Image 1 (cartoon, one colour):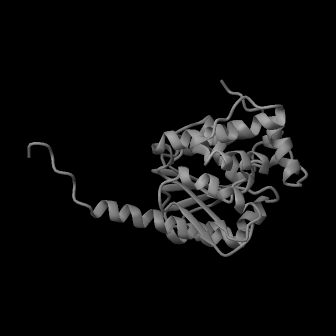
Image 2 (cartoon, rainbow, N blue to C red):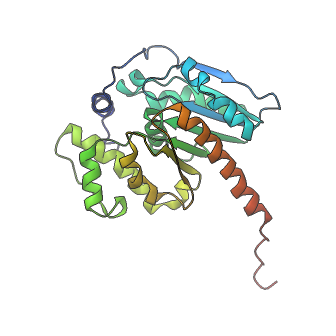
Image 3 (cartoon, rainbow, N blue to C red):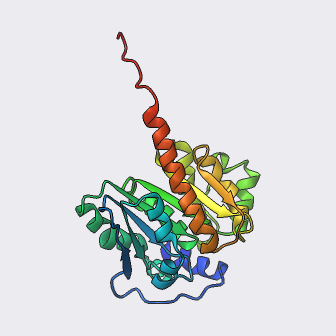
Length: 261
């Protein structure tokens, strides 16, 4: 049963992040494409932080950073801003307006790169539409408020934490967000290509170690920097280079011997 209450979730998130919702959600999700000039075989969809617009995402250089590693990738900036979360349509709109059309283009891979609010959006998309993307890069994702973090720490981590039923609407959404992340600890195949990256001076950094244990070893990257694209852009490039390095290593390993061979 879908217990998360989207309007309460993002109203609380908006207050916690001291942000005022900007933009509108009564039209199509605004997008801008940075096409590959070497043939389009992959798609990377970039989701914004709470203050981002298309122009700020393009100015960040993250599109060019992605294409330095994956020159065959189209990069699509999707301005999935706060109003889409507040009216409870964010993951549906992302799925119907952005990712389903991309699937019809027969990309060999589709990835999400989400920063801050967009990182949380990527997690929620995984919850609502599991298995629909091939990988995610979470850049300092917003992971709810401090009081739930303290409860998870007291339980020794999310794997041993019990969400309970919540004591009110503001408490319920946080438990449901982390209830989903707890499924990652029980189903490690879901995190095979989930990567976390953030700056050591990020103001959300204290919550990141709570997520790290449910991700595979080596899929967390920390670099000097703050909560900004100046940190996230080089981290995105570093993560994708690591993705390629792991794949190359795996491809070079000998195939397992057949039983009885």
